Image 1 (cartoon, helix red, strand yellow):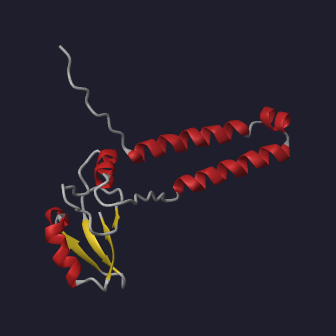
Image 2: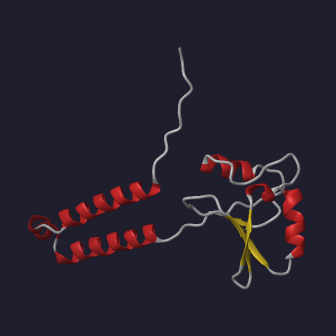
Image 3: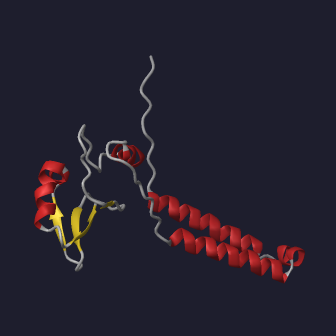
Length: 147
């Protein structure tokens, strides 16, 4: 009897912690006397500098942009990548705003205003028919939508 495979999920925080531990062990390994004598001071300093640059890049946020014509599957692709339905989809054009999606412990949806203020939304308010009147009301003040 075959069963449907289950999705395996990992905690991003745990993966980052494990990677940082491996990275620290790697750096400590390069700083031993034997490696120091074999590689020399200049090359070892260059390796340490480059590993520090890698660490800094890993600590920075990464943005991925999805752009394209209406009804080409951008929202469906985003939901598939995230493995949860964060962005609404429909047979008619549904995503009518610029959305920024960030990882968090709970689902929050905000309309971010240009002056730094924000308006909380409920998940059902992301549907175009409910979002359109809200966007129209604050049109000149909206910066983007934050999920």
